[in-house]
Image 1: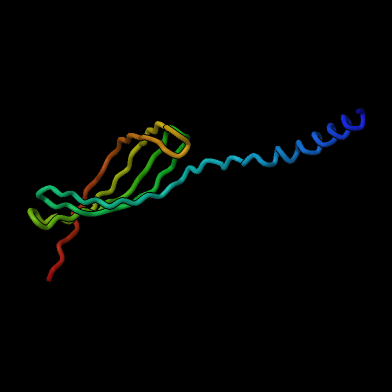
Image 2: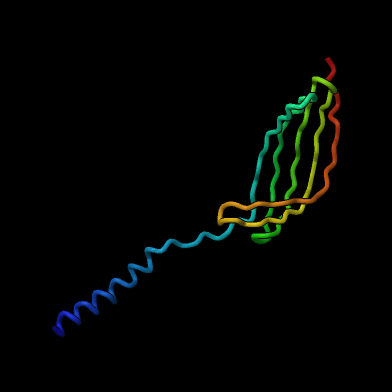
Length: 117
């Protein structure tokens, strides 16, 4: 009986490090991100465009982002402009990979010169 108890104790002690290695390591959070977007508005002005930007998260709740959008419309008004923007972002993480956020910032629009045909 003592032999079985000793063998069981040795098996448990040798098996413990193997169990510890089976747990996945948590990856460090990524603070820098890039994003892109495409816009198409179907109202009477028929705006369309896209853009992109980059951002930095200080922690799970606060961050900043900046980017540019390129908009154009040709049906009602001939619009061709570039918007540059920067904003502060407040996030509410619902899960580890999904957050709801609100942002507040400033934007500056610059009309692009009309092309000459």
